[in-house]
Length: 128
Image (cartoon, rainbow, N blue to C red; front, side):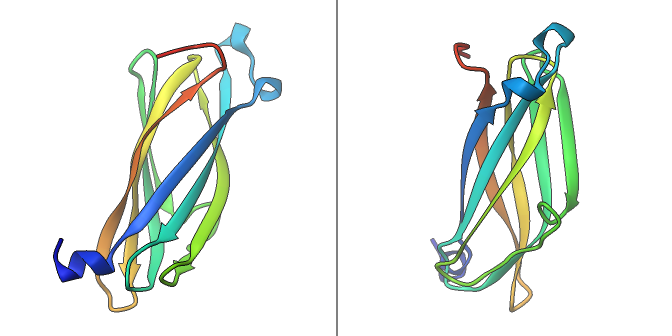
């Protein structure tokens, strides 16, 4: 890792929950919540500018979502700081995946992507 890369390190952790009370399996509607924790493990303060999600259901139908910030915010993280938020998505199938990236910028104006590793969305009892 170069010195520059050491400065730019945003860890992304995700936990998911199936929301049966908001879902309608008979109608092909499966609602999931996901809680994301972003932690600045680098040496430079960084601000989240935009997000890019790739959401894939079990039928390989792909949705791409792009937008500013997350839940109406553009968190600015000092080294060692974390930011957590919860959002949700709806699938037509009982399982799928999400992945993507957050576009970040340091106080020095260096832009970089914080990768959101692929994670599963599935109702309890389904394995894929």
